[in-house]
Length: 347
Image (cartoon, rainbow, N blue to C red; front, side, top):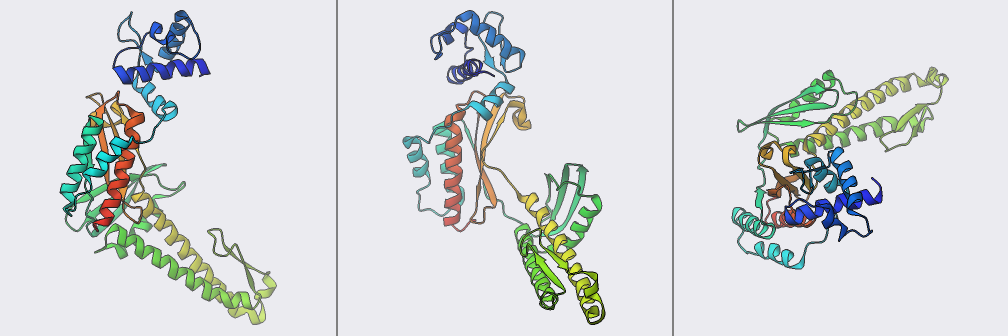
């Protein structure tokens, strides 16, 4: 898009989001920064329609953005403002109750969010992690995998994630076998801590095992402490005679390195299973729940002190939501709820 086309497209979308009505070329001639004829504007709008970004409800009517057009506007042209002071005060007031009942607090926040945005609010309460009974990783293709968590309370959770490039199904089975050795009776967060402690222990074992080799001059460190660290042997001649014992120690260090890398890879698995994103916008059919209703969902997670997602806050409304206003409101509310949950010992 050139500057003229971009401005016309942005004005059409903003006008539609404000009024809900198609925007015609004559209306645009009065508000564009550059003086352009109505005929020229119609030609540009026709091109945008050809690209699938605008649509014409009737032959003689103006244009409205398509779902693809709204997505392009939201991702690249939308101007997100700050939360208005009145809106901020209403959200803060909904959460200033001394009552420690989490459900009541979240209900008050949801009511305030709905009133401010004039949409339906969505507040997902913190999930209570149950201990894991069993877990499996299943390859769904080169760039998709599934982790199946069987929990102690009988629930089964399936989570799709993007595995590291080149990961094989056999490596996934090995990771599952490793994790199941530790998993039973632990939550996912507990399991991540256990694996992290295991990585630290293996790192210490390598340092101890390699210390004598480095001190004797048989090997030197390269990038020690970094993910790319290597222990470099100083020539084969150094492994003769008095260094025969050193050769055995080198084999042990190599094995420790293999174990460390395998454990690091498994830790990455756990991170991928729990990773999340910030504010997300789903328009129309992008969200299967609302694909038939012409609705949009603006949602943001809230997190605990460890940056782990424990719930979400959102607004559901028509696709012509005032995204530039609602996105910062949802983001602010999610951050506020996260802090409140921490203060109440729920995170």
